[in-house]
Length: 294
Ligand SMILES: [Zn+2]
Image 1 (cartoon, helix red, strand yellow):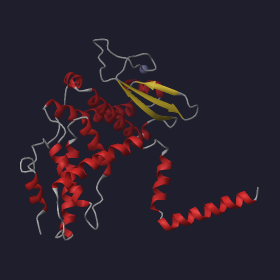
Image 2 (image 1 turned 90 degrees about the horizontal axis):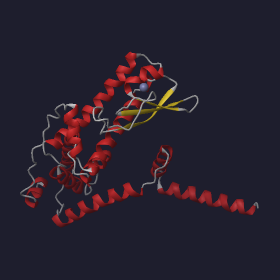
Image 3 (image 1 turned 60 degrees about the vertical axis):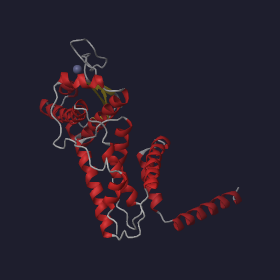
């Protein structure tokens, strides 16, 4: 039995050893520093940061919905990354007219009316306590700090860890040959592909998560005999290309349906093929019956 790791080493003698990645994590940035680094990013990289910030802020609100008054639901957050008061550079405003960096859009459950707010005026305009407003502020600050990690890494010259990604792909390549393949984290894979496309360094937590995934696949390989595995470098590289291509296509072609539809679709996928055939049969009968009744 050939050791799977040594096979990879034989194929990529120069890159199998992972380059150092700062696993101890970010250093906090000053506002000025944060903006300077941000300005130097390429457009797709800025989009990526904005998207993740928006996503994290939205999930903060969804998880902390009790913080806001029962009358209001969080709709979205608009972010002005170039916001600078001194230079009079801003384009987002609070309900009261004040220029802001983060504009939170809340919707009234009763009337459907929306309201645009800066974080410091949450208490004033919503009638929630200053204490709760501070709680929200703290949470959103955390999001800012989390994204700082990416900027900090970028500033230190880190980019997307292609070497780690390739080892992960190798794991996935081996994984698909297993009788009981490991159920890898698809959300993580999707996020990695996004970061790869933008040539951005990844979150330290994601880096560690990938190492864990690779380890988990290796464990599964040890459980199963891999005696008849014939690894082939060309095949592996083709697999890698196809894998990235397919993921991209899925992303593009995926229609944006209501969440409920996705759930139903997943349920439908779980139904056995023969059961599906039966449902189709019933459906056909129904159509026939409807025709006859006309
Ligand atoms: Zn205001």
